[in-house]
Image (cartoon, rainbow, N blue to C red; front, side, top):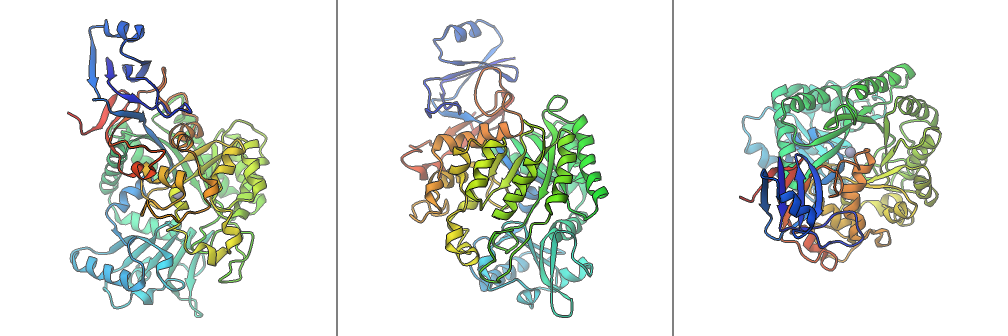
Length: 541
Ligand SMILES: [Zn+2]
């Protein structure tokens, strides 16, 4: 099958110039055979074939489809049915929103909320703050997904253990009774599995289907899914086999610290075994790329491993892994050909992660560090030297989101936050992702925040977060497609519109002068998304 996508204004994603004088993509089956102009000899030749379907894009801009460098697709799908508390600025707001939601859902067995901001309530969340609202279990995910806030009924049904799980915290009173807040490993190993078990397989499949459809509409054709579990993998696999997974997925399996070398090794070996069957050569559409390791928590919950004590508690937080336990796991993964993705937010966790990756002897494995929210200048430099991908989510560097940072970590350390410019200047590959559902899934918010360091929520506000670390528009666009593609070895397949690559692109309406009016990034619309030479989403006839 041959298709000529014509009358387009092509932004190729690989040039320092945003736009090139190119208007056509000649596509054979799922591959771009040629890109150029209608009058080019290659296009004239292409049109001599009698099976060419011509698609007129009406002079619209087209871009390479986006590659989300870090997403949690199943959680994103599940979050679509949760009630959003993102606009609540105080405990009163939250209580009111819960009351309204409860009244509107008389048949629900539980009430599930998300996107609660820690800064909205005084101190640590407790179940008593939710008292008197509703007798049903109430679960509230923090906006960063690293904390869960439960009411008394939820604590009762969770039946929590008397000790903290590895890498997790169950907050307790002086008698040892849980007070309603669970953090980090306690969320991952206790709350999520409990709630997931209550959902049927069919429901979960539906949630993934919906997430995929929304991702297609937003302009993505490839994602890197972080923290995949076996159950979730089986769901992805089922959709893939049925031909329903209209996204390429490179998965990183979650490896949790257990304190026991054998069980940690077993987790890595499980991912390795799957990787042998599902890798870039054997199954490019759904594969196991590597493992995910969580080195620390987040700043807002005071669980990120930062080099100075938190100003509010006076406490210094240690990473979840020691250098020895981390290096042991990394060595097994690296030796099996797996890519390692290390969540590291505080600067101490970043040092631990870079040290760990430096200890490996293999080159070219494209290991990666996720988030890199606070970094020491010397660690930023080491990223480039060691070939480590900096996987970042610019929506997290939103001044609106980080109001707690200066009081928690001090103004001085805050000047080191989200140092993307340094990562690029050091020669690191930069991959932009959304971390949805912890942040909005649209690529445009990321592009706006990355290039302005202002909040996408009020694009004309002048307040910035460390503006000197901002990216140029072309750099940010490249990191959202080519950088993320490179990070998972898919740069020969997707990430730019070049001959020989998959015909994955998006068609845009309302493209403004992005460079001089960055707010126009937030108002342009994806009206078509093409995957492998066919539209998987289109508003056009
Ligand atoms: Zn994440």
